[in-house]
Length: 223
Image (cartoon, rainbow, N blue to C red; front, side, top):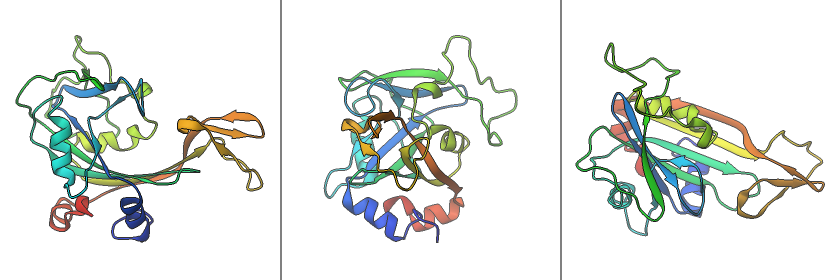
């Protein structure tokens, strides 16, 4: 079984060693809602709205709780993301939710500023209806350049109604030789290698889709 696919040792370690996170991106055929991070981890980047799962709280309850600060919407679990960073004490285990409708307009919080963007170009076969406009003139283009490096790997699956699991291993890029020992910098901003700054990037990754029936039957997102 490939590393990171539940149930397996990696998934158990990731879920047990560090708090779980949830993230979601509500959308419809012509626009996607993202949040600009105003402070803390990921400051200055666009992402979904989410946060830590409290003890004895389900991931779906946590997603709805975090969501209430910005918008009200029904959520569907659709993906699992595993992130492993070289030198980090814990891995990240993230449940992804999607919403295709909402009950009120988004509002800004002290942590996130909601913004609408045009539906991005898709590298996977689109599930959009024929003749659907994907780039309204009154919306800015989808900001992949201001998002996490792995987002283009799985966002097309999210936006075309797929269910998916992905793992990404982050570390110094270019990958150092086996004899070198890079040191993780504070706040995970990169690495120091022989006194030289080295950027953190994706070293290896995989992405897999999951059959809808299998996803819902086994409730993989709850593992």
